[in-house]
Amino acid sequence: MLSIPVITPDQAAAWDAAAVAAGRSLGTLMETAGRAVARVILDEHGEEAARGVLVACGPGNNGGDGWVAARALHRLGLGVWVAEVGIPPKGIAADARRSALEDGVATVAADGPWPAIHLVVDALLGTGARGAPREPMPALLARLVALQVPIVAIDGPTGLDLATGVDHGANPATTTVTFGGVRRGHLIGRDDAGTIIVAEIGLPAADPHWPVLIEARWAGRRLAPFAADSHKGNRGRVVVVGGSAGMTGAARLAARGAFAAGAGLVHVVAPDDAIGDVALAEPDVQAFAHPFRGEPSAELRALLTRADAVVFGPGFGRDEAGLGFLEAALELVERAVVDADALTLLRGQGAAVARLSRDRAVVLTPHPGEFRSVFPALAGQLETDPWGAAEAAARAVGATVLLKGVPTVVAPPVGPLLTVAAGNPGLATGGSGDVLSGIIAALLARGTSPRDAAAIGAQALGEAADITASRHGTRGMRPMQVIEALGDVWPRWAAEPHRPDRELLRLPRPETG
Image 1 (spheres, rainbow, N blue to C red):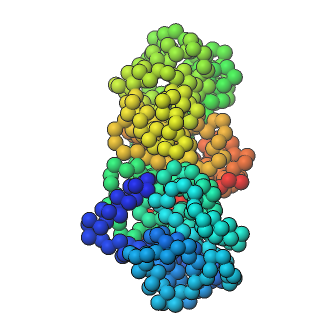
Image 2: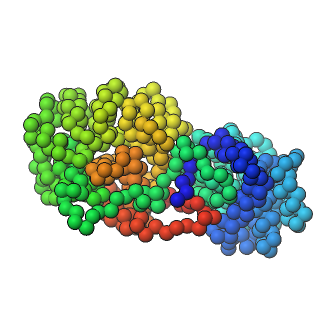
Image 3: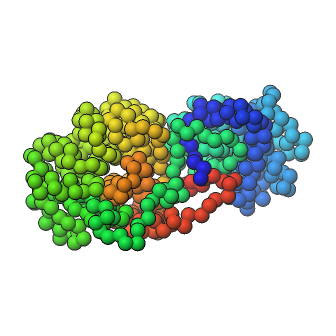
């Protein structure tokens, strides 16, 4: 199974150079890329394309891809016109332009009258573009968006920085077609990129050190099946330490997430004044009362020692008196998920986290605010380079770091990063992270590595959220609905079909309404 790298523009250029070194012609790659764009146009927007296509071409190789696509559509008998901003002086883009004109592709002035247009192809600026587009491109972009027709962007919408996701006045694309892998800016700037399709054009194998975008096939192949003679004792014993008074819902959601991901036994440890609420509301959860301060009792020590994975944090509370208890309890377990209030208590405790991670499998699951608290020196990287921030944090403390966001980045202490793009804004509600921590713990409890457990858990939660959005929309989505939809994710992964080689990945625009 091919992996889909998540790359920077510099890495994209290095990949092209590797193709040349391997004896692959850049001209052939451009021809293949442009034809792939034409194929996507016909598959995704065939009705609009049949009524007239305008291809906006810049002077670089991105424009060259546009000229190839225009020629391919023209030869199929579609009405195609090219509006160009700058003429490529030489090289493969100039060759593509000449071939298109020789084949009869018509041009129109960027500022002149146009025929009836029902689809736009944005081939103005490619992966390596930086900053805001310069005139006369902004004027043309304004005319294109004023048409109010679907836009297919080649590599990415002009004005979207594909390194950082910064929007410099981009026209949001309906569909983005890119090649070989996903650019980081696509995932940070999801509102601008639209549906992302990664086409296969014959590039050599990607550098194995680059981050990888995971998907259903990747996750499904790493989800261990149950043996026919499974019982509750060998499906994984998960303990959730959290749920102080007034916050029992967080621990309950984590417990339900663990059950929904296959755990055989789930315990919740909560203080005396809260444990009754947990026991009453969750009859399938085993409840254990213990204060979140002082040393763990002998009974709690035994429970934590027997556990296959422990979740610390959902509804734990932020009383500083709990820090000593938290550290003492963490030392008793072999596999842990540290989330929510536990992360807040560990702010500024990088050395303690590193010590606790030294002899056990630990997954930290911060959202950006928690990440800034625990790793303040790395906070400046979050918005434009979450991969670098998560990687530096994981290396610093020796734990797997799952940095929640758009996208979610999973960084192990050693080895390549994973990226998750499943999900939608419906997950931006209290409780979604608690569900995720329970899912990850259930996977850890069955022996999945911390990196894979974190990534599989995030992918499952994201896909369950997408299923929920298709049923209820995102506006009123609740974590309980997402937990219910997890039951649809696992069989879907088992039946995930193989896509044709020409399309490596399809990442639909997230549901936002």
